[in-house]
Length: 76
Image 1: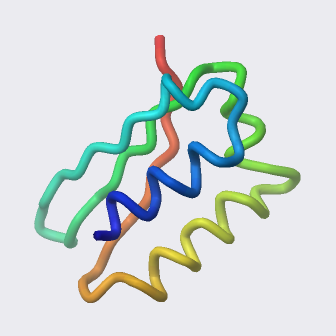
Image 2 (image 1 turned 90 degrees about the vertical axis):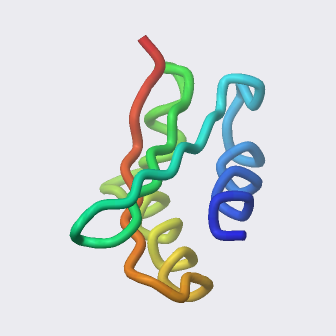
C-alpha cells in the first residue's frame, strides 16, 4: 500500500514517469523505500531546499503502520 502510494505520487510530479521505480527493503531499522527516478527528475522530486522530499516523507509517515524510510536515487 505504501509502496503504491509513493510510486503514484512520484510519477505525478516527474517528467519521465516510465523511469520511476520504487523498491522495498526490510532491515533492522524498519522498511526502506528506494525511489529510483531519471537523473533529470531528481531535482523535481527533491524540490527547493528538500521541501518536496520532506513532504513525501511526511505522507509516508502518515499512511505507514511501521517505521518506513524513503531514499531518493537516480537511474545511472
